[in-house]
Image (cartoon, rainbow, N blue to C red; front, side, top):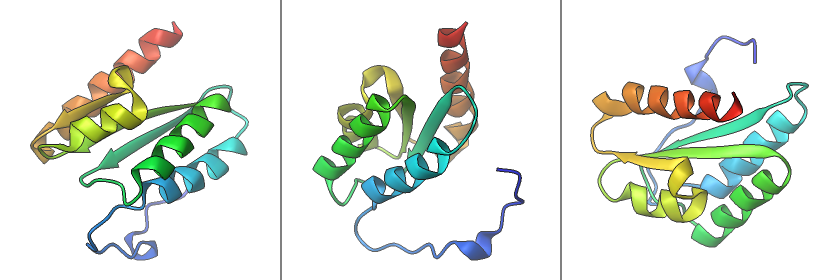
Length: 116
């Protein structure tokens, strides 16, 4: 929020699992403090969560507290678990990173139309 991106703040490495529940918790805590009327957490992932159950519980907790959740799975096979966690209408799968911009635009357009 108002900060320039700084890739040095992220220690990105592959390790056999994606800590999606922890990421959702962190995002929820950060966005909860915001004054905006509408709060949205948008998840992009190329892997399965390291804990499916914890991730589903966290996504439900965010929604119960008025934070909308959406996801795009990047890569074949990611859409199934995204759909199970975030819901069919709140998730989609792309197979090529080149499709990400179009998928994000389509998702955000749908989100904005819902609020109109």
